[in-house]
Image (cartoon, rainbow, N blue to C red; front, side):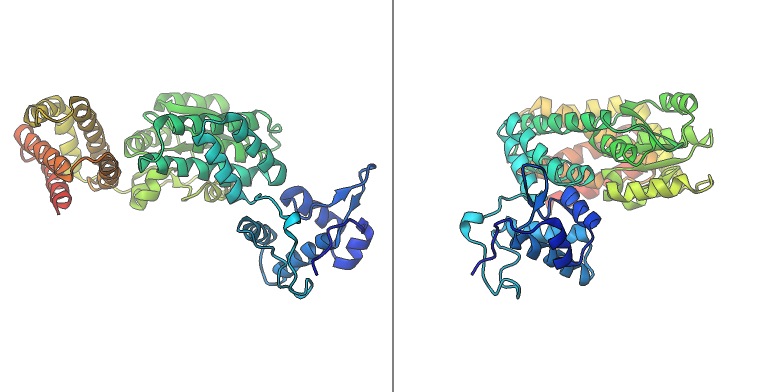
Length: 438
């Protein structure tokens, strides 16, 4: 026999049956959408036996030490796979909910999948409807991180694996950014005195993460000034003075923008400004944070929120950084001075059968990353960026030897124009060529 979903209990009866407070029950309904009682024409809640058993199930999970948010996630995960969480429980006597009462897939994972499918099909109306449903059921913070942020990461991976086009990635990104902009505009006024300046250093154009961080901090009552993408160091300095910022947060996703972040942090620290930073590149290279004049905020947005709160309550202290090896600084100076000659020599050595536009892009990409790595003190920082290039070439059916030959030609050109002082660059290029060939 299945548990009835016919609404027969009022709120008072439910509170007596489940031994839970009215405030807690209303908070669960508002934040997590569980339970979902029906309403009378006058707006009064009416609960079914199934609603009562749902509440008891959540209470039981809490008694096992689980947080309510995790318990709700578990409930939704069960439904997403077609399994009724109450099936087999003592209270249900091993009965399951009839198929007629099947609950739609409304877990955050399911909603994220629906949003991604809509974006890949360029279906803006459906994508917006999915987000509206998600925001109606879950807190803003969770939808932004679990649907939008993770969704953008997944569609980026699809592009990386040649399973999605640039156009599809841009379409999804535009929808996600528009929603974050709307939420930020609708955020309540600041209730706290501290001011936080958030933006990307020069050469960084990916603004989803800093915009999300600005939204989440604004919702905590902080006064957030968001500057967006590609902000030169001097603009940060000017704005810090203008708004009296208590903290500057810089976000970099690539090695190139991490080098720009390094320069910006140095300029700001001359004025004794508290700095926090983060982004994809620091998750790929944890040791990279040791070279930055500031505080690494953590590997996730949630970690960053906690770190920002801690920094705002700590006294300003000098930050020790790892010294850049002299051989890297010397190689950087020589590379910048002779880069045009190096790149011209590479173009002369490549096969005429290779795509000229692709070669020019590859030369420019690698040159920028070499300069960034040297300014940060370690050529091995480029290696992870090269892994991205290897996978991309594989997805487009390009032979590995093509990349190996390119590295050898680059090494030869470096040796020709900055022999000796270019040793860190040459050694890394030769090592990479060997790895590709093996």
